[in-house]
Length: 63
Image 1 (cartoon, one colour):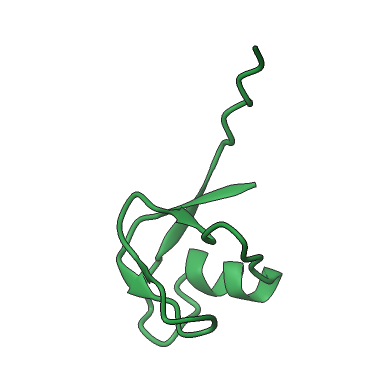
Image 2 (tube, rainbow, N blue to C red):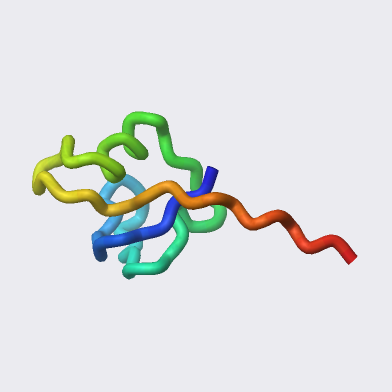
């Protein structure tokens, strides 16, 4: 499952990384918890905003 950032935010849970619109969440090397994914993909957060949305993963190109 992959997620795309739809609203800019700063990740306070990890290292303060700033995610811009269009970025993939989470950044490489990090794994988001189910609770964090729900918090960012719904309005169930401090600001009542959606920050990420699920996208279909592109199949890996095999040569």
